[in-house]
Length: 357
Image (cartoon, rainbow, N blue to C red):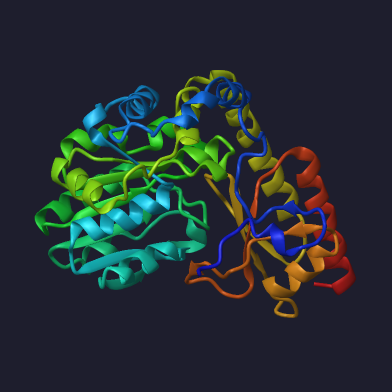
């Protein structure tokens, strides 16, 4: 089992979980109401074609039709099923990034190529380094914004990459699980190009932005009808449960919740970055998501030791495990509300002062 955030269950005390990058506003109230009103729906099987669910997704993201949507049991489920369906030999991923990409490729016997794509301080990618390495009939899988660095890739770079991949008879998968947290996210997403490129699959997660990871609702977006059919063949029946269907019936139209989330992330991201940047011995990297990527500059303490010390303050951070291409001095923290963010800042300051980092 790969390591992920949110593993609060092994600690026999209340934990402020900075390891799991979930919206701190929590489950939307509209879903709580809809769940009670739709409780009778649990007595019947979900629609295997998920027509209403896909219609709700289309209304939310725009620029696509219901035939372009493939729902699944979380974004990771779609990633695994897509690589099974594409049946190419090579998978190219960036470093550092989410380790499930490599694991998914290896599971279907793909040769996984990890390329150090990111420029100085992760402010962008070196596209030429990727393009010159691509073989025919390959898959490139990139996370945008990238997890754990928060790097946002420009549309112009994706478009250049797509054209090169078309020539190489290859495919691009973009994991946009965190795109809604990015500044002007609708302009940052590549959804508008779905109809123009049949070698493009975009993957989204409804659960990160809407603060409900336990629901497990993800979806893929592509104009490649054959790919959708192949993914559907690889999926078990009823891969999306009734609770997720009920969530999709209301959360995408909860404009008050969406606005509150955007107001929160735009305020707290800059606040937390600024305050953490003032602490000695820490390097904080700019992020376009709902988390920050950090590095301990003094080798007297690594992220594993820091986690132990922060647990004394009931704080859990995300360790390097679960990400490829990071050192033991790197760690990731979720951006939370002001009260919890201030608790983290104060705790880190105390630890740094005590240990003279």
